[in-house]
Image 1: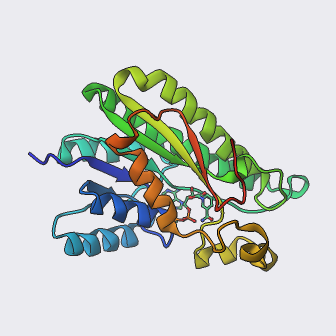
Image 2: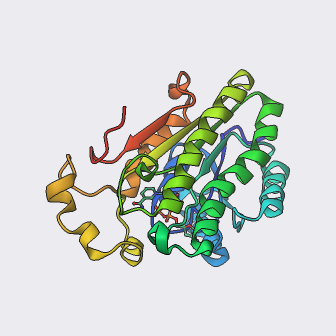
Length: 252
Ligand SMILES: NC(=O)c1ccc[n+]([C@@H]2O[C@H](COP(=O)([O-])OP(=O)(O)OC[C@H]3O[C@@H](n4cnc5c(N)ncnc54)[C@H](O)[C@@H]3O)[C@@H](O)[C@H]2O)c1
C-alpha cells in the first residue's frame, strides 16, 4: 500500500498558485490528485508530472461548484488511493464591478466558486479525514478579505472573508479529530491571466510603491507556505489565516 500522504489540490491545472502547490506537494513526496474544471489541462498536467516524478498522478476533472461531483471525486480518491490526508482549496473566481453596478450573476458566481466551492470540498473531505483521525486542509483566500479597497470587488472580498470564518469554525470542530484547517491569504501573486481581471493601473508601480520586498509575488511563494502548513512541522498551527503579500497588507 502507498504510504505517501495523499493530497488533493483544486484548480491545479492553471498558470498560478494551484499548479505550483500541486507540484510542490509532489516534490515533498505526496501522492497528488490533480483536479481542475478544465478537463484537458487537468489530464495534461497529471501526465507531465507523472513523467517528471516517475509515478502516477491521478487526474480528476472537477468544477468545485458542483456539490455532487465533488462527492464523486472524493469517493474516487478513496477508492483509488485509499485515503485523503491533505486538501488544498485553491479554486477562486473574481470579476471587478462596484457594488452599485454589480451584476447579480457576478455576486452569485464569486460566492459560488470562492465560498461554496471551498465548503463543498471540505464537506465531502472532512468525514473521510475524521474516519482516520488525521488530515490537513489549507484554504486559499486573499488579502481582499481584509483590505479596504476598490481594487478587489466586493463579491470576491466577501466570499474570501467567508472562507476565513469557515476555516476557523472547521478548525474548532475538527481539532479533536487530528485535523488542522488553516488558510493562506495571498496578496498579488503574478500570472499573465490577471491582466484580464485587473486594470493596468493596478500593476503600475506595484513593486516600487507597495511591495516591501522589491518584487511581485510568485506562485511558489504560496506553494512554500502551503507545503509547511500541511506538513507535520505545523502540528501546533490550527485555525489560522496567514497573509503572504510581500508586506503589502501585513495583518496581525
Ligand atoms: N493570483 C493572485 O494574485 C491571487 C491573490 C490572492 C488570492 N488568490 C487566490 O488564489 C487562488 C488561485 O489563483 P491563481 O490566480 O493563482 O490561479 P490558479 O492558476 O491557481 O487557478 C486557475 C485555475 O482555476 C481553475 N478553475 C476556475 N474555476 C474553477 C472551478 N469552479 N472549479 C475548479 N477549477 C476552477 C481554472 O480552470 C484554472 O486552471 C484563487 O483562489 C485566488 O482567488 C490569487
